[in-house]
Length: 311
Image 1 (spheres, rainbow, N blue to C red):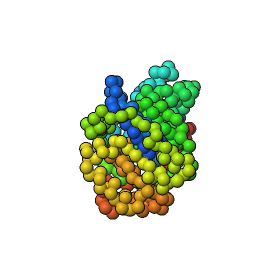
Image 2 (image 1 turned 90 degrees about the vertical axis):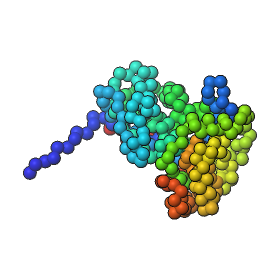
Image 3 (image 1 turned 45 degrees about the vertical axis):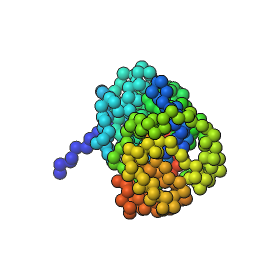
Image 4 (image 1 turned 180 degrees about the horizontal axis):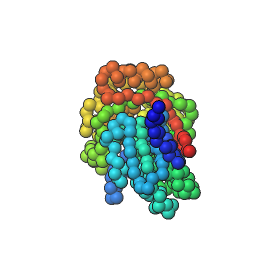
């Protein structure tokens, strides 16, 4: 009998999961001289995950699997590889790494999938290389990589200010259930902000008073009040670029969603449900009406990037 050779197991492997997010509120101010818009946002991490597996390698390289994997760059512009390079530079590491990303968060969907990859890569490479850097050090690196990366690192529920990278934990009780209408067509974040600039003209700085009802709803664990308080200043701009998003928004409302909003810069539409079972009802409505290329259900809040296996 001839035995088929079995590939050897990697000498060391670190597996990290990081969540996608939904912006419960996103308030955007006018673009400043540095090109950035000041934002005030309330993030919630939800149970749609990116998974990054880090193994030793002579070079820094990346492979991708999962839905829309073909849309993800595998060159040094990829945020996960940039995270590995930045960590290696700061920690004085000259080792390579092979990163494998398994996509669970929609690509260019307004749910911070790329940011989750970067946060997961930071944690995975830090563990693989045993850099000894502290959590605060990693959080600083996360902020250098992108505005949403720090939240992907910490997860749960938080208020983001500045570019969204300055985080304050938010008190939140209970669990909230969501259905997401996902479009295979992505929306460029830069294009959505450009459309926002045209629609908003000069505009005003973000006003934290606008989110008082939302914060009260989170503290009370009241999904009905939270649904009524969902807000996104970028929603009109996303609809301007992709008018078809009006359809999943309407379907969710007709199916009894407590609240429905474009997630971040879109095009994913997030519908808040009364319960886990109601989230399945909303998902079925999205599917039956043909207004989404894919449908996801999730709960939040969940923790940020964390090691789930290390051998």
